[in-house]
Length: 433
Image 1 (cartoon, one colour):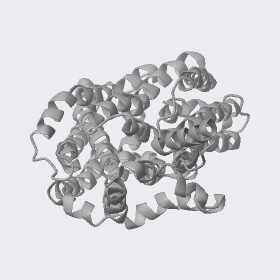
Image 2 (cartoon, rainbow, N blue to C red):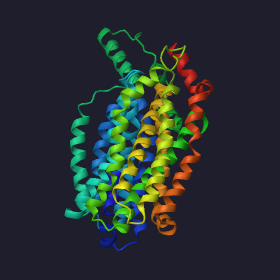
Image 3 (cartoon, rainbow, N blue to C red):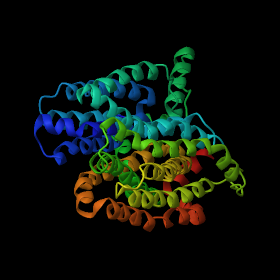
Image 4 (cartoon, rainbow, N blue to C red):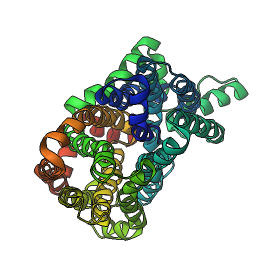
């Protein structure tokens, strides 16, 4: 919500600080870069100390860095503070799917991630909708005060969440038994990691997401695909105000309602999970687990990969001229939002299901690419739409997404072979055995 609510107040900050719009949009970029940086810097720390301590510290510091933005007297304060807020938000974004994976089995993981994704996906949509009305009636600073209040509530809620990370739980249980019995021979599968010196542990856990980004075939292709999809999604949070406020002359609050189509599509994706789960269950079981292979979930990504450019094409050619009824560009957001949510849920499910113990590192690397590209593309949004026009700017983005459609279909058919070539997945399998 904090990422996109910012875009609703770009005009207000531009007028107050008298700077070009591109400079203000940098606040979106620095926040997304911070999320990418925090994902690799902090998320892997959970594999050392557990997820709960990281959540508590991150949520608290996230709120701390919102405060300078609300009180900012210059643009520099906004850009820097939003970067550090993003750093601590990144650890939450990349760890949350790992927490979901910790407490769900293969059958219901997609449902759990779907429920979680209502916040991850629709939080961005709600931010844009709420931000428009808050900016229109209270001013741009109250956007930050609202998020600060929400972060305080979040801190209280996250304090109720117990530790879920298996290695951390087993280490604590081992120490407790050792203390109760006085017998130091009690041990668990993960004790060998503590035998390594602290600097080596940190080096390994911080380096693993980067290593997986470049050397794990699954991560390489999925990072590329999800990075482009996410970048186009965040470009929409720059493009929608251009279409509805500048071209159609809507007030900020009403312009925010243009995102309702994307939000509706996301909700449809979550509601459809039981049906998709049944289709997944119809796939042939994996001989090793007796359950459908992770690739069974990729068929939903394939559907989403087709819906996204369809929605983008529809939005591009109904956005302008303004004589086209406003309902059509909003309705175009439904297949676009549905496709994005399907891709996000089931690609995340595939990555988490493939790597299990190393899911957090794999998803951290994915977050780096997703938010890195998402931070760069919006900078070109205003220039792109003013140069090409809404029709051809949207068409260009849709064509890029069409070019990437083969990726999920290739993994659906040959993903099991690619998984067998992964050293980390093979290592995990041997450890489980």
